[in-house]
Image 1 (tube, rainbow, N blue to C red):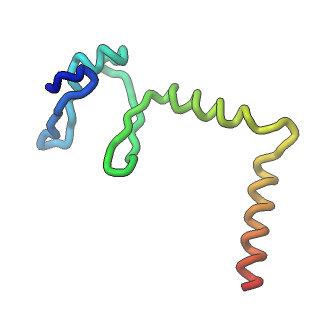
Image 2 (cartoon, rainbow, N blue to C red; image 1 turned 180 degrees about the vertical axis):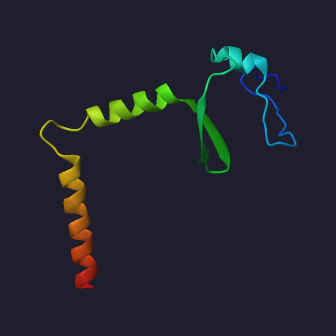
Length: 88
């Protein structure tokens, strides 16, 4: 363990499991049985609670102005891309 309590060295066992040190689990109020989402970010893994991801998405989508259809925007964008491909 390093002197920084937010960091620890862990090992991957033969079955590919990683055991997260107790002090880090406690710091994030994680308990046995809790589920996390994991994604690759560059050369690292990012573990997050599902609720954290959902909150981030709700915040992002709440910034879309009322009356704007993301479906219509996507269709228009795809049509414009297709038109440029045909024009080339």
